[in-house]
Length: 242
Length: 336
Image (cartoon, rainbow over the protein chains, first blue to last red):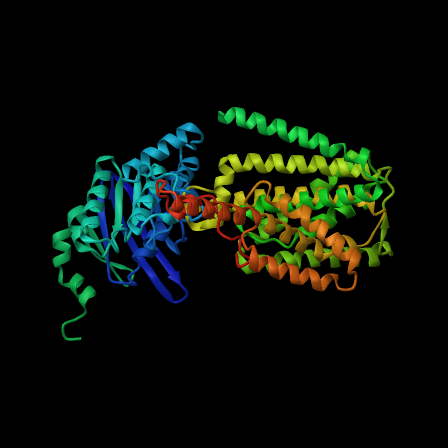
């Protein structure tokens, strides 16, 4: 498989703290990869570095060979990297439909007018928010706001989607629905980097996982094997004799 | 009515209203026309200010910096080049200053931007004062242009029409959507593909250029100007409070705030010249408490509440309160 997203030696320092330390990995077309690690291990920083919210101190990020290292978030988004946020972020003064129209209007196709509206409705249908375009985004329930965030990310026509704890806070029924929804994106050719603490979702969706501890990659491989590695268990649970 | 027919009807109505307003100098006396000039001036200032600050919620107190630069550009250039070129030059100077300031400051947000914009206005005033005292050796300047009050009024009316037309266009374009997204959450806006810095600087510059033109057009009315007059910070405060009273996220909101407040200020300053600043301060505080989101939003909320009550009295199909007031935008609070 050819690499769609290629991350090499990615490093980010905040003063004396090295949040991400020489991280390298690649993501192939249609691949869904879990990015795991205890709190503070640098997962969200990786998401911010890849999506352009932060500039790396060193290293490179390439998307289909195009160097997007340190590019502004809007350029990265237009190049094909979509994202959701750890704490759900919908645009509060906009309607549900406008939240999605925005990403279409400034996405790679720069749609506007009737076609923009049609596509926005299509993306809302896709995530199960059909017919709710006229409501205010903040009037939606928590899970529906997450769906809206996903619709907005999909509207940007991403080839790589970064999902930051998208499953957090969902009840078991919602979790099953959400897992199906994310699983269906693979068929559309979208590669996903999934930061997640909910292991069932990771097992179900990600054949491969990368585990971080203190900003460094400590494992990368098939999910079942990675989750059984002693170093991974130690990073999550601490040493038995500690 | 189809959307196209609605637009045509709106344009026709706007043209009729504009023609009626343009006829005002033929029926009003000097005092009435003077009032109309002041009202038109603040209507443009508040509307132009809201083009940028309304949707993005960046509260700018730099209005008077651009207004004063416009007035001084005319004072310096009036006798050197033809009047249309004077206006064009003033617009160019305002634009250049706005781009410079925009590029330097738009990384600032919230209260830091407010303070910077206020500081900028004071800095420009002090610089102009220093230059006049130390280089030209005089503090004030005379502007002798063969322009009567009605000419100034017509120019301001034209500027108002242009400002509202731009506001209408922005509201319907993708830029309008981008600005509202920036006002809500810059990070989400950026990750949706919006070039944040470029959009903000462009709109700030557009708004500032219009404000500069107001100062330029109005200056011949004073004949004599000096820095303390045309860089008076009260102009910035009045602009903000007028826009906030009407509702800076609506096309006609700032206009709706500017007209009654201007008349009120005129009446207060004429009848209570010594207590005017105290009354002004009290009024600002009251408005912030009673109508934090502007008159239009307040009216819409009341209407929605009345509709909801009627719906509850008669067994009509139930509508959730939030869905009944979809247009109510959050407060453009000064904390941003």
